[in-house]
Length: 180
Image 1: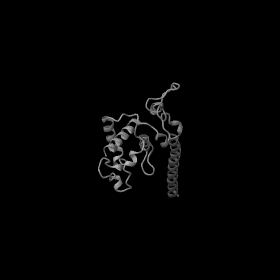
Image 2 (image 1 turned 180 degrees about the horizontal axis):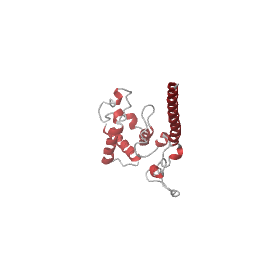
Image 3 (image 1 turned 90 degrees about the horizontal axis):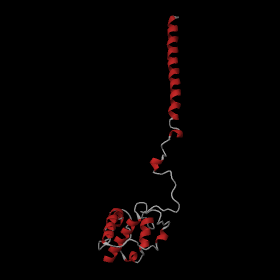
Image 4 (image 1 turned 135 degrees about the horizontal axis):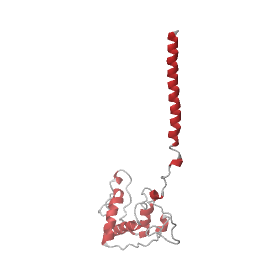
């Protein structure tokens, strides 16, 4: 009998330990889960993080350089007139921007024989924008194509380039077209 009593005490102690562990887990897990509830996200959408201010904008005001000149569709850009003077500085800026943003696909448009860029070695060769077809297009057409993308493959770069940078690229393309 005493052996049976020892065995029963050991099982009871083990069972009590298991119940204590289970109780502790059932107490801790809901507490930890509550930490992820939405009411704990006080600073997620704070004004400091988003850069917004409390006071309202002045009536009939337009931020400089952003909404004063707004084009919604590519076709709306076709009739635009280039406001950027085509001088050496604008062409140099356009050449640098073309090298960064356009060269991978279009390649060296100043070359005598057009071959496209490094990307076009594996994919479709883009059209020669220094050729006669694009020389007969308006500045607004080239501007709209850069901002909103081409017919099939060319991505839109309007999110990446400012309007003056886009006009600088147009000036560079026009200077290359005039030199051919």
